[in-house]
Length: 223
Image (tube, rainbow, N blue to C red; front, side, top):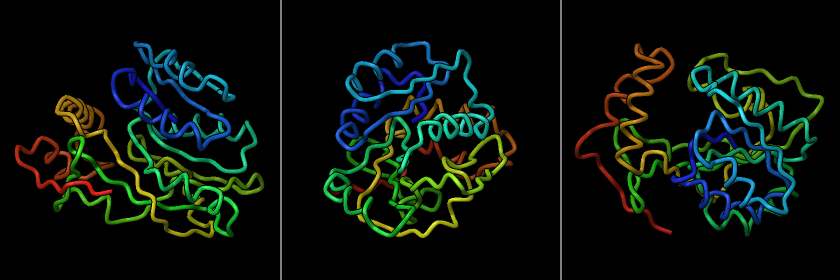
């Protein structure tokens, strides 16, 4: 997990939800100025934890930050890597399926991600359809494999591109992404993308512009 100033956002919920399903945690604190690091230590007490604290954020060059996360993670010699952001929450059915997934023949596990626009509804329109597709969140680590990245400073992906060659399957558990759920977060992200990618070279200009839509189409979340 990569975190930055998450103390008063969704980090507590994320760590409390995912703690029963992990054997070890690797967290990059990317320049937090609040109590994020202390909260990680508190909530993961009793679980082996690698916590790296970057004194200055590296997010303006996301691929560099993701490579750092990857290198710190594989240094622990993991069998499986579950890669989630601090505002992403896996649904409870993952816990019911975890052992079955880890003992199967697939080496990459794909789930759907829902961009929550508030606590109880996700956004769905022409610009927001992440939930229509499956994406990798859990992979089996192959030490002998050569890993290459999408070399872009924004939207580089959480895993190396090479994992696309792993045998994979799509599964039922879902990921609730709360990164857009509060108005202040949407404003902050809008400003960030306008600053880091003003010409939309790495993203989608119309989607950037839609972030602050006054009346987006929302769909109620159902369990």
